[in-house]
Length: 429
Ligand code: NAD
Image 1 (cartoon, rainbow, N blue to C red):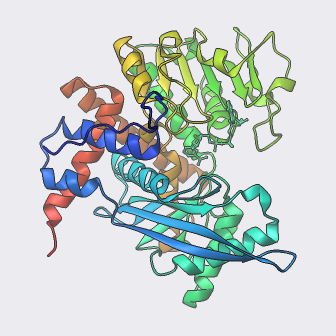
Image 2 (cartoon, helix red, strand yellow):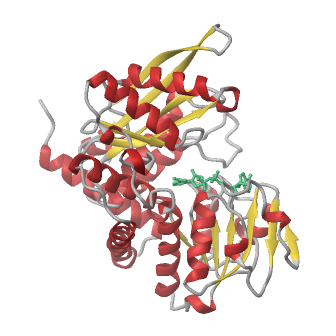
C-alpha cells in the first residue's frame, strides 16, 4: 500500500484546523487501510483528473475592467459526471478546489449517486459586486468553463457566495452558447427553469434523518431526545424544524451572534431562519442565552454543528457532552477532535452522509432535467428518504462488521464503490 504521511496545514504543525485537501487525502488513506484495494487505484485517487484555471474579465458598472481568477477542479469521474459547487469567495484557490472536489467524490459515492467529484469558483468577495456585475461575471465564467462542463461532463451547483439566481444566469449563458436550452448543466436552479422542489431544504432534511436513525440505533426514543443545533441557516433550521416536528426537544439553537437555550425545548417554528430574517436568534424570548462555544458543550443527547467548519477541535473535544454528534456543516470536527471523541465513545455521524441530501436532490434535479419530467415535493422527499436509508444501512453494516467509527465506515463504503468501478473499467490505454 502506498502511504503519504498526513500533512499539516500550517508550517508550524501546531494547528489542528484541517484544510479540505488535508482532510480528503487523510480520509482516503484511512479508508484504504480497511479494505483490499489496489495501490494504483489509491495513487490515482490522490490526484485530480484536471484543474481548469481561467481568467474572468469583468466590466464594472463604472466601465472599468477587473480580471479575476476562476477554477474548476475535476477529481474523478469513474462513476459519472463531476458534481460540485461553484463558490465566490476571496480565499478560493486551486488547492482548496481540489480538496473539496475529492470530498465530493466520496460524498457522491457513499450515497451511490452516478457522479464523481468537482468543485470550483472565483477568487472574489461577492459582497463587492453589484447584481449586474455578478451576472456579467457569472455569464463570462460559464463561457470560460464551457469546454469542460456540461450535463454529461461536469454539473456545477451553488455554494458559498452563489445561489439559485447565479445558477440561472450560468445555465442561460451555457444554453445560449450551445444554441438550445440545457437545464441539466447546473443544479440548484429556481424550480421555474428546471430546479427541483425540496432542493433547498434537502441538506437539513438529510441531517435530520441521520439524527433520527442514529437516535434509534442507539436505543433512544426521539420523543425523549434533547438536541442542540449550532447555526440556524439552511441546514440547521431545516434540520431543527423537522426534528421538532418528529417529537424531539430542540433545546438550543444559535446563529453567528450566540445561542438561546430552554431546557424544556424551544418553539423552533417561531424562530426565523437565516434567510427569513438574518441573525434573529438572539431576538427570541428564551430563559437563557449562551455563546457559540457553550452551545457545543451543552449536556444534550444530540449535537448538530450546522454553521461552519473546524468548531470541534482538540481544545473542546473533551468538553463535548452530547452522546451523538451529527455533522450538518462540512468538516465541523477536526481530525484531532475526532480521535478524542472516538476514545470518549461519542458517536459522530459524518458530514458526507448526514448533509448529503443536498447533492442527492441535485441528482434528482438533474434526472428531472434530462428526462424533462417534474417531480412533486412528495416524490422528492420520498426518494431522499429512501436514498438516505439505503446509505445508512450500507454504512451501518461496515460499522458493525469491521468495528469502525461511522466516519471510517462511510469512507470505506465510498472508496469500495469507486475502487470497484475503477477495477472493472480498467486503465486506458
Ligand atoms: P447559511 O448561510 O444558510 O447559515 C449559516 C448559519 O450559521 C447562520 O445562522 C449564521 O448566523 C450561522 N453562523 C455563521 N457563522 C457562524 C459562527 N462563526 N458561529 C456560529 N454560527 C455561525 O449556511 P448553510 O447553507 O446552512 O450552511 C451551513 C453549513 O452546512 C456549511 O458548513 C455548509 O458548507 C454546509 N452545507 C450546506 C449545504 C447547502 O446546500 N446549504 C449542503 C451541505 C453542507
